[in-house]
Image (tube, rainbow, N blue to C red):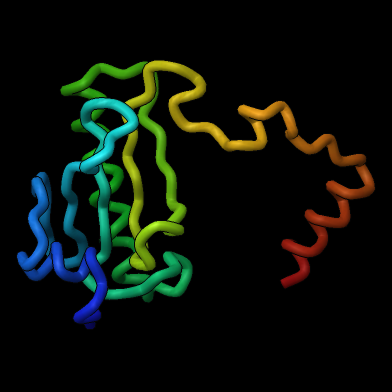
Length: 136
């Protein structure tokens, strides 16, 4: 189901301009209007869900299948050193995967890394975090 007020749902319905590069039953892909590098694409599910982990399995697999195919095409056409992915969604509350052709290590990085504030957790802290995830 699509949301009438969501900018990305409007893109899917053709109400908001986009530069479409791919579409299937599960996903819609278009050029990012403010790319990190040329070839930067957004891939969105054809259902409104702000958090990717809440997508049903069929929609998630369809979305990520499209991401995989498009990543290979971007690697072939733009010849970057790597192709990176970002799933953030702070700006538009609709799941979206950024596919970014990377020519440099810092093409995709965190603010913490850029500011030299990366955490240096102890083995105990890493063990505690790992146990929190493993003990679902």
